[in-house]
Length: 519
Image 1 (tube, rainbow, N blue to C red):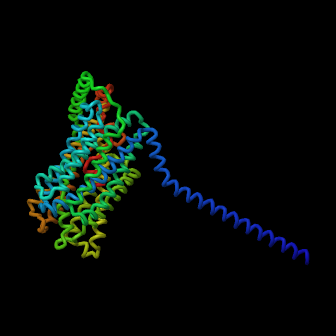
Image 2: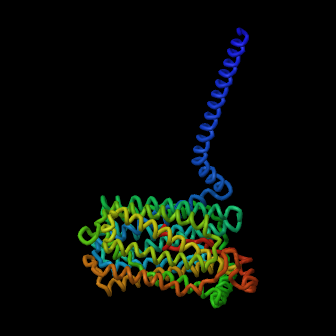
């Protein structure tokens, strides 16, 4: 009996020891798991820094700084801040009718339509041996002086204020083209880092847009629309400084070299003319233009209604900025959705359903204007945020395939120059959209205080969006990986830039102003 009790005690002791050992082991596993978790959290913040350090070591650090300044400050922050502040400037300072503002905003696209011209200037006409640095200085001075004139001089006429705003847009466009030329050169020299450079561009522009939208309403509220424009002079200062510090090899200004460049440029222009005549090229190009042009813009009419406390919900400046900021984050979601699930779908199928959803999502604006959301018990602020997120996601899913399609239409050897031409066509479509919307707002007498027919204008816009589906036959059925232009074109132009990489003016995933403003 005593032996049995002794054995029981021994078993209990062993069990107790094993339980304690298991407990200690579990504690060790928990500690290691927590350490691993904290290490993963730390690496999330450390990896971007290491990535930037890697790019700076492989490329010139001043070039990386240039991307951050141009894409982050110039295109991201300035583009979004400019959009909100100028809307309030025309409404509160100049007191212009929304239909007229639509016409004015269309003129902002003129410098972007001229992107190939700026690119050719930077490539063919160096100043004191530098092809990039002087044009950064020019862009900074032009944008800064234009912003200061509007901010500091009161009682400007509408024509002079419009000229200054076009000057700001021109400064942004010139800086964009110049840094794109630098990116193209580095992409050729270090091909393995080309995707990393484009990822850095996208991150900087998205982060800048988020900051610009988030702060625009605050500054308009406290400084006024005109006073807030003083902040638009800050990014041009950095761009001007960039022109003096960015690294660039000085090339001798030899006259025979210029003649060679002009001769090569003539070959490239001829090649573009021959390429655009092919049905495989002009048909999808025509679709891209018409899909933008027929979707007439009603933004100014809706903006005036949003901020009117009597006719509309009367959103404050801070609320408008917050709505746009949330829309910028939704645009990032649209990019992720396309990248993860839609990038391999044939062009025609994807653009058909994207355009269909684009027209259907426009009905949310109609519901909001008619105040049906209140009948359904949905508050204004919640509904407009939902509408903004849905429209931004669909717009991005609709836009990216057209950008990818544009890259597939570019013949080998003049990819950059021809892509700049296609981006001009898209910018022209955006200009037509603004002017067409302004004309419709004027015809239906949508003014600063009369929004009776605004719902009808939006209905017409939605009908035109859906009607664009009838043009989908212009889009090829090919997959994104297929060759869309004849092989003989590629062979014909494959040597155009063999002696001068300068004609690679714009990277293939360049961003149009309309996309940037909707980040």
